Image (cartoon, rainbow, N blue to C red):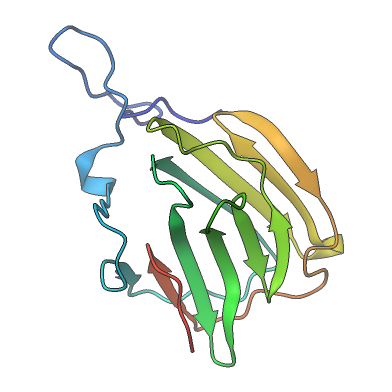
Length: 162
């Protein structure tokens, strides 16, 4: 189960003056992209190791229509779409692993904060999607037996083209 919005598991939650919990993640972990541009993004300095499984989770808020863009992309030499989370046009959010695609059953363009997670393992390419603590979808054969390659570039808020 995810931590409540604006709070950390085992730590204090942010409070509004009325005493109600604030529905935002703490500012120190928040990236805001107020406009859809090709220059607003964050680049992670530390490289990732080779991965045979992963879970990626984030708090996300969007009222963008059509599509919110690319929450994150991970590119390695020779493969711009090694690991990408993207929503474009009127399409559902998708996860791409080595150019293989799975459509994710998220409903997030309502202007509210949502906690989303995607898990994946190279074994049979099994994936699961969670929104606000509830499993919303799953599948298999998403880039089975393809490890996520190391030494790539992780960018938040922008797709990479190499």
